[in-house]
Amino acid sequence: MARRPIRLYGDPVLQARARDLVEITEETRRLAADMFETMEAARGVGLAANQVGSLERLLVVDVPGETEDAPHFRAALVNPEVLATSGEQLGEEGCLSFPGLYFEVKRPNLVKISAQDLDGNEVDIEAEGYLARALQHEVDHLNGVLYIDRISPIKRGLLRAKLGDIRKKGAAGEMRVDE
Image (tube, helix red, strand yellow):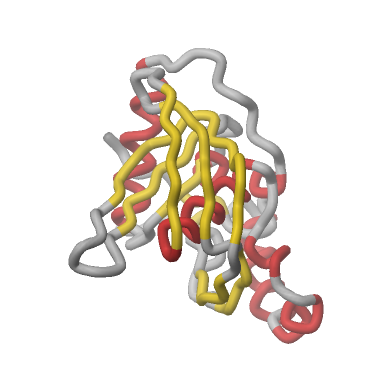
């Protein structure tokens, strides 16, 4: 396993739609392991493959349960697709490709996702709350959608200077590497 550099806002790979994986290979499993290590080093709860420069439909999540009774959820998901959503939640989000930026984002509270695990088994996931938010955030990445796309233009305008600083670093090829 190895940590991979995290692409920053401004890097075009973040706004590109990832390709479906036709076959799950040892390289796919290695990418997932590297993504878990990278995400953990950055203290994140999710990471999409394009955030480390790979345009493959692969994401990893490691989300603690919101209550003592709620289970911890850790998974690598291949070719995830959102099948259904319902409800609404408003909550703070951050993103490893936008270091230090957190703001309120409105998302559905419930989500149903279909994907494959790293062994090629079909998995259906029904999630709510924080886990639903994390899964939707990462699937958005795979679709080339950034969380700032989900906030109002007025809020984006207020963040213009901070976004500009991150964009310059991302466009210049600078990447975040956590120790």
